[in-house]
Every structure is written in C-alpha cells, then in structure tokens.
Image 1 (cartoon, rainbow, N blue to C red):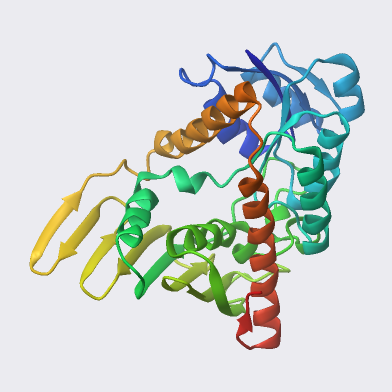
Image 2: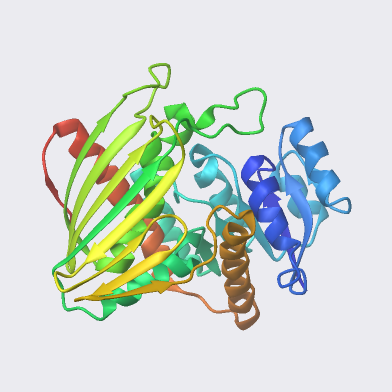
Length: 335
C-alpha cells in the first residue's frame, strides 16, 4: 500500500482528489496518511473526510513525522515550485496539479532537477483519460493531417476556492499566473498538442468582457497551428451559463460533442457514440482515479517517465507563449 500526503487541502483536494483516493479502485493501492495546509478550516474539513490523516503546517514537519511514498500537490500554481522542490529534497514520488508552475523560468529549472533526480512523476493532465477526448485522439490518429479541431468552454464566473482569506485566488494573477487561459485553457492546450501533435504557431486574443474586478482575462481565444491541423480554443468566464462543446473534421469525416454525446459523421452516415455524462461528478472523478492508478503502477515498478516531465514543461512553455502572443498582438512561432 502506497502512502500519500496531500499538499494543499482546499477545494480541489477535497472535491476531486480525496474522493478519487477513497474510490473502490484506488483505495486498494493508495492510502492518504497526511496533509499540509496553513488553513485551520481546510485542515478541519479535510480531517472529516480522512479522520486518520495527520495534518502539518509545513513539509519539513510532515517528512520528519511520517513515512511518505509520494506527495500530491494541490496548492495554487504560485506555490508549485516550492513544494516540487520539497518533494525532490525528500526523494519521494510526485503528483502535481496543473499548470506545472506559474513561471516559465521555474518550469525550466524544475524540469532539469526532475530529469536529474528521476522521481516517479505525473502532472494532473487528467483530461487525457476522458473517453470523449480519447475518441477525438483516435479520430486524428487515423488521419495524416488537415484536421480542424475546436473547443468551446463557456462559464459565467470563475470557480471560488475554499480558503476564506482568498476564495478568488483564480483571478489573482500573483497566485494563479493568469485568468481562464491559465486556469482552464491549460487543459485544452495539452489536449490540442496530444490530439494534433506538436504545436507550430500560436495566436491569442485575451480580453475582459464581463468581470472587470478580475485582475486577469475572463475570455481567451487561442488559434494553435499543429503538425496535424489547426485547433481553435474558445474560453470564457463571461457567458450566461455553463456549457461545453467540441468539433473535429479532416474534410471527409467529422466528430462533434455537445456535452452529452458524440456524433460521428462519415459521408452520409451518422453514428452516435456513447460517452459518460459530463455533468455527472463521477465521470470527472474517474479521470483522476485512472491517473492515480497509473501513478501507483509506476511507483510499484519504479518507472521513471521522462515524457511526462517534458509534457509538463511544454504545457507551461506554450501557455507562456500564448500570453506573449496576446500581449504583442501577433502570431508567434513555437520553438
């Protein structure tokens, strides 16, 4: 049984990570024995979910008192580098929420350290476990190129965290690194790279359409040219309601997703592909469960995967380039 400590016991830990760890599939392989948070309220709420866990205010005390196999980093992006370094210091495995780091320089430095130390590591790029995006990936894999991929992500506000001192950290640039492009867009940047292969050029327009009190963008439009086609990523916190949809076509066939089902079109033939209901929380938790199980298997095999470190770094590099494109109002080359 692997022993885990969660660093950052707020909303993402309580509503997504902990339920996944307590699921029937995962609890056979992983036990959450500790946590780190400076918030007394977060710590109390976390103890209600996992009564046996020991909570500490810093990682040094955690590692001095508990024998830990790996940490799961769930703090805001501005703190990722601090706790990634702590995990490397104590030579444990690492799960880290996205984005990998807040700053590109931090990402480059940590990439080098991770490649030197070779811990078992995985980023929370859990959308790759979604049956929806696996179908889109399969569609692209059967083409040689010329795909058009579109994601539309609509929200009416940014989600609030559980920390009463700063529940709106997602819209605080010092903590989050950016707005909806950083918070939600990160998922669709790595998905685009995964589905359409290596990015070549990027053009981005960011704006604030509704939430003028935010210090970050509430809307972002990304055009990403990749080796196997073009991706358009439309993101907003300024919609009237929550909705998702997506589309991919190679000019001969197409696949569309309306948030509930996939429709596949090949010439005049249409086929509906069943996928789990995205509005069901269990669907989302299953992505984390699959990711945690892959990590547990890698820990058991002591399998170091360089590609996951590269993927984490590349996602931050692409995100940084997106913000530079928006700032400079020009298309930029992805080196």
